[in-house]
Each structure stands twice: as C-alpha cells, then as structure tokens.
Amino acid sequence: MTQLVHNQADLREALDEAPAVLVPTMGALHDGHRALIEVARDWAKAQGDHAKVVVSIFVNPFQFEDPADFENYPTDLITDTALATEWGADVIWAPATDDIYGLVKPEGDLRAGALGEVFEGVGRPGHFDGVLKAVGHLFAVVKPRAAVFGEKDFQQLVLVRRLAAQQSPPVEILPVVTQRDLDGVALSSRLVRLSKLGRTAVQAIPQALACGAAAAQQGSTPDGVIAAVLGELDSVAEVHPEYVAVVDDTMAAPSRPGSARILIAVTIEGVRIIDNEPIELAAV
Ligand code: AMP
Image 1 (cartoon, rainbow, N blue to C red):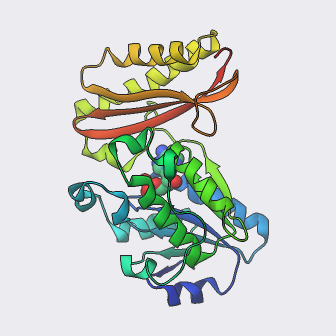
Image 2: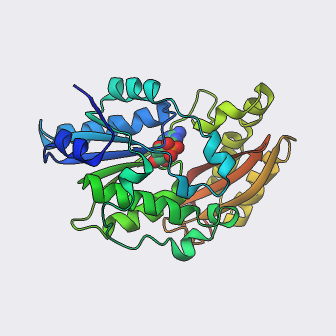
C-alpha cells in the first residue's frame, strides 16, 4: 500500500531501512513523470521485493527567480497522490520547506559553478544552485541508492550526475528519455498555460529539432545544425527563440564527431519551453 508522508520521521518509518530509489518531482504530474516512476519501479524490482520507490513532491522555492512563477506553479496533491500511487510509488513524500532544509547536512558541492551560468542559467541566475540545494537535501534525507531524472532537463541532469557522484555511497542516476505527446511536443507542466494557438505553435520545437537532427545526419557541423533549427523556428511567429546550441555530454562544445545534443529554449506567449534532442555529428 502506498504511504503519503510529510515529515522526516514518518518518511523514515515508511522506508524502514529498505533500499530506496528516489523520483524527485515538483508535482503537477503528467505522463513524463509516469515514465520516471516506472523506471524506478523496475529498478526496485531488480533489487528484490524489499526496495521502495519514493516519489517526492516538493515545489522548491529556491529554484524560482520569479516569485510569481513560484506562486503560480500548479499544485494538486490529491490528484498527484492518486497518480503516483497508480504508477507504482511505495512512498509519496510531500514535505514542507522546513522539513527539508536545516534538519540534515547535505554531502557534496551544492554550487553549480560555471555550468550553472550558461544556457538555462543565463536568464535564471541562481536557478541551478537552487536545484542542487534541493536535490542535495533530498539525497541527505532519503539516502537513496538510485534516483531518476528526465533527459528533458538535460543541464539539470548533467549537474545532478556530478552531485550524485559526490555522495557516499554515490547515488546511481537513472536517466529517462523525454516523453512526448502524440505531436512530438515534450510533456511539461507548463503547457497548460498556453492558449490553443500557443499549444499548436509548440509543435515547431520538435519539428525544428528533427530538422537539426537531419542536418547532422547529412554531415552538417554544429553551426549548420543550429542554422537548420533556427530556420525552421523562424516560420512560426509565436515562437521566440532564446538559445539553440549543440553540446556534448558535459555541456561543452563538441570537439569531435559522435554523439551530441541539440539544446533549445524558446518563449511562447510568455511561457518558457525547453527541449533537446540527441544527435550524431559527422563533422565539427
Ligand atoms: P518537474 O516536476 O518538472 O521538476 O520534473 C521532475 C522530473 O521529471 C525531472 O527529472 C524532469 O526532467 C522530469 N521530466 C519532466 N518532464 C519530462 C518529460 N516530458 N519526459 C521525461 N522526463 C520529464
């Protein structure tokens, strides 16, 4: 039976020292989160019967630079609890801010450093420090053996991998490919803020990523890939690109052919949307 807990004492009792796999979320659960919980479930199953899937639901105030964005973040604990239960959570941990911070000492370096100042970090100063602060404290409280994160937030995934490696013992990170709607749009809690027109305009993002991937396949350099993506986005007036980049697994500019990733951030009707796509570069 799934248990909903709020404070650390109840969490500890629910876990009963079982090995845990953690799925951190900010609630407003959708099918993207479902895939994460299913990966956690599979991991738990592979450990034997006693391992537990912990889904945390915590809207972390420290990763919002805009207080209005934090205030407007959709929250519905009743629906989220029902969904996480249906998808396989053993424990749902919905702490108050005071239940996370101050009570435990996190391990590792919670500063994002230079990697927190590029791409998503440019327009959102302090965002990744806020993310690492939350994840570090979640790790310290739950002490998970493994944790599940989506590739949708690629820069976050790279930073979290670094922090996970600094835990003792290290936390295994299980990445999950981006889950998409039927029209290719990456599932996101922010999509509900768009009008019908805006929701249609978002389709330009997966289309542009596909153009970039095709350009890479035809031998384009990263600059050529970026031009292909921007060219496709240009045709949709509602889409305002913030950045398009091609990076390697460490978020650096690719120095050799091989696997890389297109990163994209746009604004549509004032809503920021990010996405990315793995590609194979034939040339740099
Ligand atoms: P959030 O609740 O938006 O903070 O996201 C919680 C986790 O779900 C993060 O690891 C995200 O990367 C992941 N996630 C969000 N949307 C998707 C998606 N469409 N596909 C895969 N993972 C996702």
